Amino acid sequence: MLKASINNFRGKRTPVISTPEVRSDRSSMLYSENFMKEELVLNLKARILAFGIFLYYFIENGTMGLVPQKFYLVYRSVRISDLLLYGMVIYSLFYWKEYKVLFKSKAFLIAKIFLLYLLFEFAVSFVRYGFNPVEYFFRLKGIWTSFLVFPYMLLVRRNGFPFLIKLIFPVAIISNLLYIITALTGIPFLPDVSIIKQRLPGDIEVFRVFGGTFFGELYFLGIIYYWITKRFKAWQMGLVALFIIPHVLAFGRLAWLGFVFTILVMIVINSLNKRNYQILLRQAVLLVIMAVCVSYAFIKLIPESDFYVDALNSRLFQGQEDVKYDEGTYGTRVIMQNSALVAVWMNSDIFLGIGFHPMWVLGPDSREEAIIYGALCDVSWPAVLAAYGLIGFALALIIQFYYIFITFKIIRNTPYVNLYTYILILLFSKLVFDLTIGFSYVFVSTGLWGFFNSLNIYIPVLVYMYEDSKRKGIIK
Image (tube, rainbow, N blue to C red; front, top):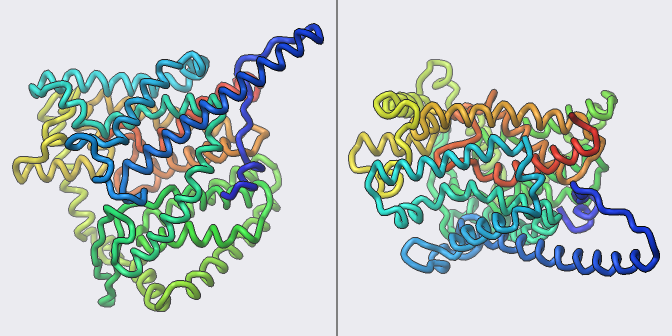
């Protein structure tokens, strides 16, 4: 979203702890001077932290960034982004008193327990498998991304989240453009992408680019949410087309379904909150206009658009016979993977699972381990069960259902529409979609590497809104 939209749609920072009253002109002047100094320093700290988080994402994944990962290597597999991650987590824990109310929040309790359980699994695993704990720690760096919830919590408390969105926006535009060119030509204009040729029914061959764009989907859905809850702005249609076309060319049917589901959730909740169901007709017309405009842009701007329209139609209905007759490579693979993971769980520690197994760190050693390794990375709830046992699985289930409940409670009762309510809509949509529709056996929004990446952002916003809503008496 562009700067003007962000300013109109930003989350207003409301202090969780009230400020003292001022009783004299002199004390008022002194208080004002101190307040300005504190606000200026706080604003600078928030921007530096936001830039650190931005730089972490920019470096960490060459698919999302614009420079190859190898340029950021410090030592062996350790990158600058890893040092940023550890530094920001330590920094945020050192300043935990700034977000003390959020840290001690009831809404954050289950997330804290899960993070402590990850640390416990690490301790048990390096003893069980005889690894050097320091080397083991750095080899498992994917796990520690879950601890980004603490830097995000500090950032939200300092009101630096809108600034982070502004930092990401220009890179999102560039990376989405490069993704489109990469998907059309098969030439990696983005570094470190994985490109394959996929044959679709009708002897259609397309390039599929694996790896995401730089948060383009969040801007796409953000603009749609702004239209639904605020007002429609025609000039933003170009941005909508830019941010959605890469996901169209990715040929990911589950992603398409997820976008549709999230938009429907936005419409339904907005109608419930405004208690005006006639608004549904206006929003339906708005979405039809959007679909027509995006289709027009796709046809006019994408070379050989007729070919891609045929490819999209072929992809949309691909596998109908497999579903009908309960066959197909995808279904067979998932069933095999689930069976392998359940067998691993039953033959290991039922309560703790296999923990951080060496195959995570060094790779699989046999064909059986290769199947298990692929299964752990490909499906979610059996992976959580096999890796973290009944305890980890139970924690993941509690996170799923508890956050669905309190997120809906907040967005259903809050009178505000801002950046943070948008984030809560995304969280609620993801949790419900994973639970009811996602056919990749997601079911729980935690996986092999702890929290899914988006939850690192969503959970701090949820905790902040929960405490703010309690303070204002919106929820009890």
